[in-house]
Image (cartoon, rainbow, N blue to C red):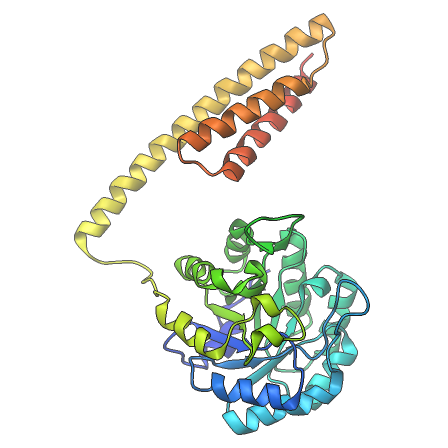
Length: 358
């Protein structure tokens, strides 16, 4: 399915001189909190005011949003500041209420994206409505599920689309609340190159002190903008307090971010880039030759094991090899997760080859 250039019209129409900034509290708590935050954000680079009206919680008993009574507060934000407003919708009823209160942009949360039935229900509720819809990545790292949600909206006639990269849930992650897994967002961009890609660093980081660094990474990868949770008093927020920042801090972050140009026409840059790319091509070709040789040896080992009736999987040896490669990679400045992924993939293919040897 092709997402055409005109499907980013909602973003292009803003004629922004900088990446789009969507900011506001995780949750709309009170009318005063919403309006105070919005008026402070009006003095920053914020283009769209966000606030959660309905909050899906992992476990019952937590604050689940103020509900429909918060929608008029967003209308007031729009009237008093001139900013567009957006909120999350989790079902067709939410859509109906949001449209009744003229919410400008709707977003689909990570917990909703995982459910094709609910996505389809929301898409059908939006048929004939000319409003942008932003689709967050699913909680789990499943690219087809993310692509499928976008395609469901597109097939239902929703032409103004975008995606939000908010990271993927992992158990006991040390550095992130939700691991970014940048390659998944990059693969989505390859499938839909014209689709606006927005980063949600708040949910990736889970803490406010690393938002700048993660946002800069997104700009380096040519993202179109950010959705950042911003609150007038983050430490007293009713939800996700640790990851929210003040409007003043948001202003500092947007000023500190460096926007990279897509390329450079300087002759020296182009010459050096071409040299580096040729070098990479040679290394990649050598990698393929090495992998071919390695799999050839795996095939011979498979024949030997088959002949002697020996089990293919040797768990102790595999664990030893993996640890040695991780240690060697670490000594050479390579990321542990990167090395682990490569050698696990190599091991799986080696096992497959040995299994099919006769």
